[in-house]
Length: 168
Image (tube, rainbow, N blue to C red):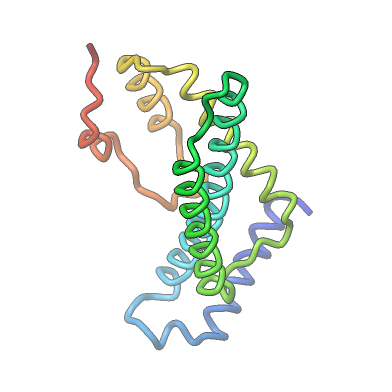
C-alpha cells in the first residue's frame, strides 16, 4: 500500500470514528477541526508510547555503560527508576484506554522500530550538538526552515526562546 493510500485509509478511519462517536454533536467544532484534533491525538499518543520506551532504553544503556566500572545505579536509584517506569507503564495503559477508540498501533514492530529510531536520533543530536549553543541554534533554525510534512503542530522559533539558548 502506498503512502497516499495509507493516508486515505487513515482519513476514512478517522471519519468513521467521528460518526461512530457522534463527535460533531458533542462540541462546537467543525468536522475538519475535529478530524485535525483526532489526528493530533493519534500522533501524541504514538509519541507517548515511543518516548516512554526510549527513556527505558536510555536508562538501561546508561546502566550498562557505567556498570563496567562498578559504579552503576545505586539500589535506591534502581528502585526510583523502577517506580518511575511502573508509573510510565500505568500512564501508557491509561493513554491506551483513552485513545483505543481513536487509535491503536496496528504494527507493534513499527512501534519498536520507531522507538529505536528516536533513541538513535536523540543520541545523535546530543553527540553532534554537545553544549555548543551556536550549533544548537543552527540546528533549530535548520529544522524550523523545513516545510511541515503534516502541518499538525505550529512550532516557531519564538517557542524556544523561553529555554534561553544563547550563543556564547
